[in-house]
Length: 96
Image (cartoon, one colour):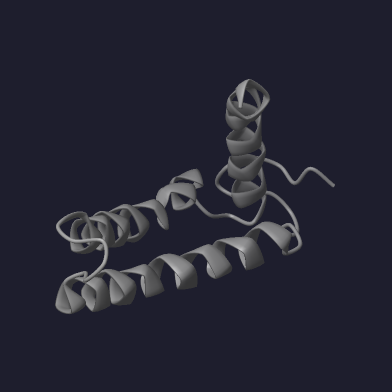
């Protein structure tokens, strides 16, 4: 667990650099976190009161709120794996 925590900052720095290469803000890294935390919290609340018989309405709401997190995560993966923008952009010269 310590290795994962130690690698977290360099991984986020590399992700931000890749997003800058495609002329996008590094803040996009945090986009999937909001819906995931909110949906996960609602799911936890649905199961907290009675794990054997969770509140169905809260469980469905929590699951539906996880969908934007999934879509944003896939979108971020596509951006991170796409080619750099040719030439300089607002974040500096092209690394190529």
